[in-house]
Amino acid sequence: MIKREKLALLEYTYSINLIEIDGVEYCITASEARSGDILLISTGNGSIQKITGLKGGVMSIIPIPEENGGFLAIQRFYPIFDSAQAELVHCRIVQTGEPELTAEVETVFELPYIHRFALIGHAGARKIIAGALCGGKSFQDDWSKPGFVNCYSLDSHFKPVQCTRLIDSISRNHGMFIRPDGTCMVSGDEGVWAIDAEMRVTKLLDMPVSDLFMYDLDGDGADEMVCISPFHGDRLSVLKEQSGNWTELCGCGINFGHSVYAGVCGGPFVLSCSRAGDKRTDIWSFTCDSGRYALESSEFTSGVGAANIVVKSVGKSIVFYAADHGCGEVARYTVTR
Image (cartoon, rainbow, N blue to C red; front, side, top):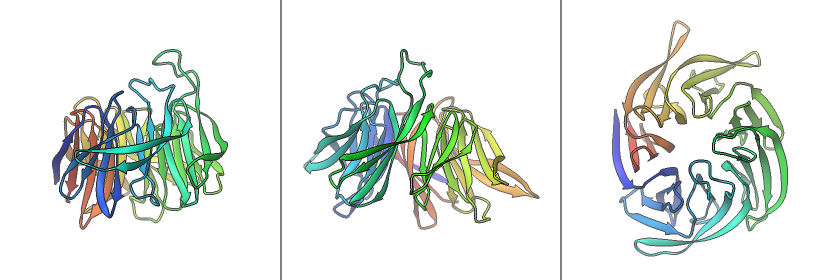
């Protein structure tokens, strides 16, 4: 069963995460619009505050664990792919009040077409892995110039002190996932790479992948790769590594796939978000019958077109917060199976 609660209206809502401030949990979410808002929503009482100080086009938000209310964000990535001025910024909430909060915003680095990033390492020794969607555009659908992936070593003030190129050529990097051991998975048109804690890069897969999530769905102790392909694609797949090669166990059709998650709630499941067609968010049961694997749709919500989600376990339920771009709402879903 899926229970959906509308938390806020937010036109072109795109990025979303959970952040703790003064011991209180909030959902932080932002619009991709040029003048788009950033909202801080209490997950407890539902109160809503607007954060001012950023410039819109916020593609991704990642809290900084060692900073109370501090976060990193991509800004100035405007629709559609108007992002030659995109940058990563360090934000601190410096003034509180109702109904607005003021953030002090400092540029960490400028990176045209930055679309995804990951914060790794520990306090005082942080690094950022960041990917550029492309290397430049002459027109909206120009994908002739591949992007790249860099690692930025930061000082204690979140200023870059070193930049290392990790992947020289990657087009339409849309997927980035951090595994429990710190390995960063990166995906694009050319396939999937793994970047370990020593910044060693290994190519795992050659097929185009938009977004990915790693989870042991079949319970054998090894993670499967759950992915959307190709870019903003129409195929949801569960891949398994067998004898050094990743092969599809099962899959199904989706429409403009944009986000994916896998876990266990009354059994293994996959969550996918489509932004076109009927704009469904689907819960797929992962099943195995006599060695035959399948994804079977068990629950769905249509008309929402989620751009991104953030998921947490609450007791025997899964709770996820969604930037439901297709209807301009921020919502909380509780899944009980």
